[in-house]
Length: 149
Image (cartoon, rainbow, N blue to C red; front, side):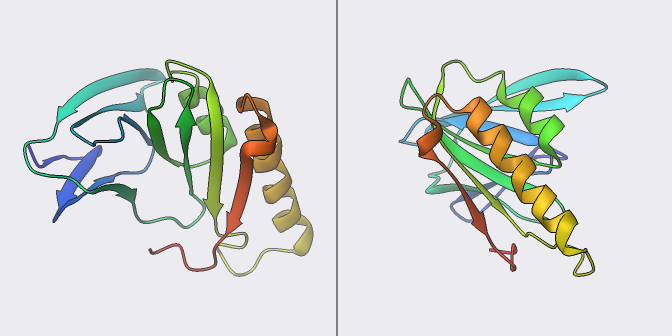
């Protein structure tokens, strides 16, 4: 299957997850688990790759962020999250401790925010990463004013 509306789609050799989706996958990208909160419940689907996949990615951001990292069993994850509350809830489904985490975000997605709102956004994400990561020193934020890639 090359797509499930609202969850993912495969374009070329990349699996793109949609807004609100968390993907958990092994290094060899032969399959992945996808999680999404729908009607206040977390749903899960398993995707076997029927075509060779080289990368898992997401696109379409605005105020969303891209969260990626690794868990203690060696698997990797990528999440396209709308806010810290969503991220905190959905990352709890990961089967083992988060050992590294990176949040990539546009610090001023609407291009009209006050400096204090931008700072608050960054601080909120830093706090969440340090809370969720077993090794807080392995957490970082990438500020990206062009979140289309």
